[in-house]
Length: 220
Image 1 (cartoon, rainbow, N blue to C red):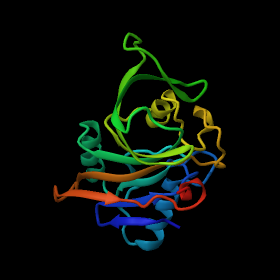
Image 2: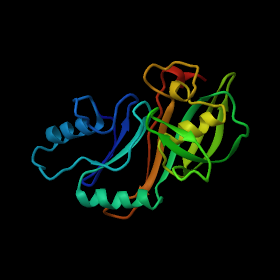
Image 3: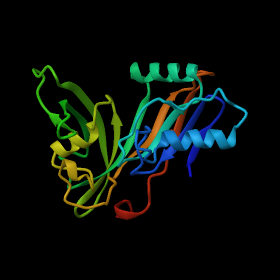
């Protein structure tokens, strides 16, 4: 069942659960795309013109806000905002260990290793690498974990996961990037807040999604 945060005639915002892929695949696995298509069919059987417009993506093991466009024009206009980097994307991450500073900006050059399906920190001189930037702030620190607020300034493949791991603070449950803690098929990364302009009205919208309160998220 979809956890709907906002909906009108142009967009749908949901709180995606962890361990659910965004796009449908050829094997019929559960996905946001399939679930939304079924929701539209059931809730609006008379609206044959609705589309399931994938605007952006979240990694399968992560949770949080996902915006979908319901019309081709809405999809085009929101895509432009992501391309122009005017969308403000904020995350919560529960990591192992402690960051070197209470707040700061992290800049790396990342490239995608398709064989290992992970992002790798490289150098500016690597033609395959892209500049990757984020801002973080430590919200809470416990004995062996820290809760971070993150604003993503660029949107690279596995960016947050790779950059935090490179600082010795992998996201809890993220075995691919060095986490020593198991969280099943999920990781403690949550897309918490998204700010963008409504594709029809131009109004600035901020949508928030509460993080999970089970498993490692209930650490404090």
